[in-house]
Length: 348
Image 1: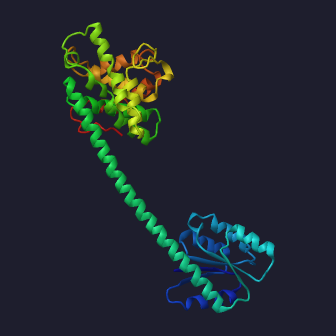
Image 2 (image 1 turned 180 degrees about the horizontal axis):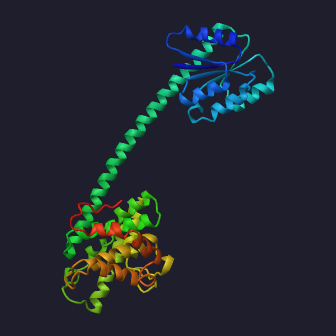
């Protein structure tokens, strides 16, 4: 255990150091200068500090306050050495963070006992801190496992849904990656971007309730068939409603609102502008862009640049202008997602 003594009286300092140094397990450092002691304390964490009240450079209260201002010394035991029995002084010292007092002239045995007791408390404190760190590490490991399992279930479920309309799963991966880039360029937090990335693949969950004849029809849909297709947002919302996790709650919003349009002409809830939840607005840009770039039974794939220009044209009509601006800001990363040589769709 490491002990720091701060006292500008050389004789007193040497006596205290001599008494405490007799204990084989104590590493004692002594300072006549309060500032030199503070500088040393900033470099290393002592387990016990003894500081004299009456010092010329700065008094013990000032030194105590500076110590307690250091993060590593907020709970380290500190003994105030004083020959003054003034009640107000002691009260101020306690308020400033003194753990105990030792009167001058002191009894060597009392000094040893007080130091021993406080260091025993410090050892227990350190043991509890180590235990807390260990438990936190174990919790983090368990949480990471749960998150990994949740992610795996999300991707497997979304890919199963995609196979119903002939997709390979690449569509959901690309839409998720594009949505993440847009969210990043909007300045949203890394946690938000990650949640959006995992929630977006569930945007077409409701397609599980659409008939194969309509879902895989090679030609144009009739008005009745179009109306059936549009019910997939409500079906998906019902499947994902009342989720307890932030991920499922966001997936619910995306499933319900990703076909809304900025001008109010979309479907899902018939919303417009900022009334459309942000995850739905972001997913709308990503989903339409990938749909344009993808070959479907009813249309050929558009070129990347043609699809890009269509997104720009629909800013303020179909899409939130801010989301389109973010899409444009991240276009270099989005272009990489659509390059055949790219081995990963998880951008930034």
